[in-house]
Length: 325
Ligand code: FM0
Image (cartoon, rainbow, N blue to C red):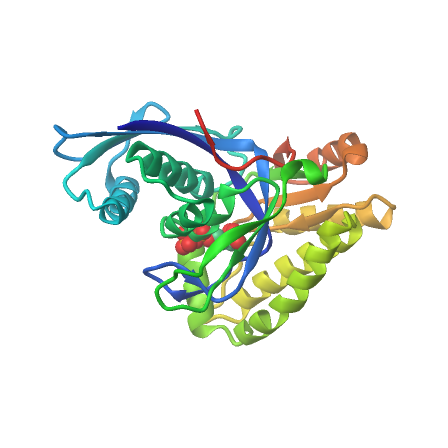
């Protein structure tokens, strides 16, 4: 009862920002992402009859505390799904994320865990079922089941049975690239979980965010199909700015941006004014991701490295979905 799975992280171009059900992790809006090949988690799950509790080893270190709890609670969900409540597991994970690339590992982490655990238990799940199970570990992770571009359909049902990701186009459809710009930031951020909750509960701009999602989604999906980089980039950057605007209307207000975040945003806009098509997006933290085309790679990397406060720039292509090793 052992299986190994690999999942890649993803970057949202239309953001998931808010839940309608905290426990089942059901979102208030659809989101859309690009899976990235540079950053992945490989996880082996071994269920054994004689184990009396779960263990979790990450990057060769035994994990305890909150991080361990999140994994074992997630395994409870899989055990219940499989009808095997008394079976414990050893979980062994390796995160291949270039030194502090500024990506949360939860997306690749929960996708790899869900895939390895279901496979170890011989559960014959479809991609859709796997995405639905992965969603309950961390929302954004449900999009990492697929390579290339994927959309998480929020669904309508209270039980979450219609809330899962679907593939749009695979990784080899379009060679679009992402530079992860790592900033030297030490301030602790508001977690995405806490930040989106505060925004849903209190932001005077939240309804505006929701009202705009259908237009952004239609326009970006058309742009992807037509491989129209300007259209995809413009929509992604504007969607990111709208998400971050909701945090300023929350109570108490907050922002994920640092001065260096804004400096990189300006660097991107200046490159664009100089005729290089590049666009940024930012998640629930200070780091910036920059979308660009292969022919501009050298210039984009060099310009970003020279921006104030930048400690590293890590380049990535579009990546594949779940694989089993
Ligand atoms: O990825 O509470 O998945 O669409 O990264 O675990 O469901 O960590 F910018 C924010 C990710 C949110 C946008 O939230 O939350 C996106 C974000 P959980 P996640």
